Length: 295
Ligand SMILES: NC(=O)C1=CN([C@@H]2O[C@H](COP(=O)(O)OP(=O)(O)OC[C@H]3O[C@@H](n4cnc5c(N)ncnc54)[C@H](OP(=O)(O)O)[C@@H]3O)[C@@H](O)[C@H]2O)C=CC1
Ligand SMILES: Nc1nc(=O)c2c([nH]1)NC[C@@H]1CN(c3ccc(C(=O)N[C@@H](CCC(=O)O)C(=O)O)cc3)C=[N+]21
Image 1: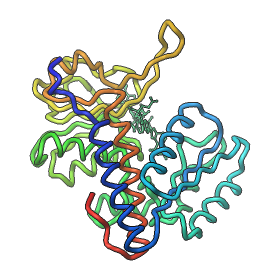
Image 2: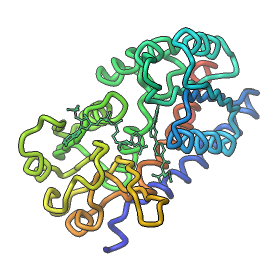
Image 3: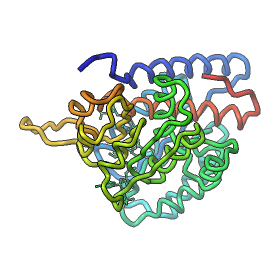
């Protein structure tokens, strides 16, 4: 594969995190506060533990105040809601992320509704969802924001392009569709009931896969010259038992046809973490009433 086709999310994310860290140092010097992020993890899903660890590391590197709350899977709805209420009231916390999915028996929608929308750095609260679709100021989900930053960096103007998003989750598919629509793309949202998905995908100048099915999107689903964003994170078994990460796109086949493509790992995943830092910086500045630095 021609290396210039690769969209290096890891490198872009490193740059973004460095700019966020510089802005945070400036805030500390001028206004005397640090952005604060609270990450809440319920239960002991090993994949979630990996993400939470990388979020905590990024929080430290950005010079933010960070708190990690690890709760047992036996946590009750009332206990979790009480923790969110405490974090809402904590003046040192400007961002709250509750890692999803929650263990069975806990109502994620009710928890999200409890988060102060100004601290909702995942952009999942109804107020932020409404703001995203109506063009008002709010907080935008991290993974979708990361995808669009990569697309604009690679393609410049997105207006008029045909975008196909596979997946319609509240965390990924729907907000990506909203952001691409705001960039004046013509957006199709495909899902498990879509008829002839390969033909729909072949229409796409921009193809975003957010499905959760390892290597589902084949090379002949990709329009020649298209830009492919692979959001999927799937661990597949290997003979040595360690497993490896693959995306929702069959990378080698798709890369042969596309003009640009994100790898997994090293594509959208690192952007999610960097955008979480960016959102926390934004939330902190708005809450404190100081200008939001452009990063
Ligand atoms: N890189 C990152 O930072 C992040 C990566 N992820 C990864 O992205 C992927 C998607 O995550 P998420 O949106 O939370 O997943 P969900 O399971 O919530 O949503 C999956 C979506 O894919 C659709 N779908 C499932 N099977 C098919 C199929 N055969 N054909 C077409 N559409 C299908 C579903 O359709 P329907 O609605 O009809 O059921 C649904 O809309 C996962 O691999 C996840 O690990 C997630 C978050 C961040
Ligand atoms: N409330 C909530 N918000 C989320 O944003 C959220 C969530 N819940 N639940 C789980 C998913 C998944 N997610 C990822 C974050 C970083 C990487 C990431 O950094 N991936 C690295 C590889 C990491 C590895 O090696 O395991 C990469 O793709 O290069 C992946 C996935 C955020 N999620």
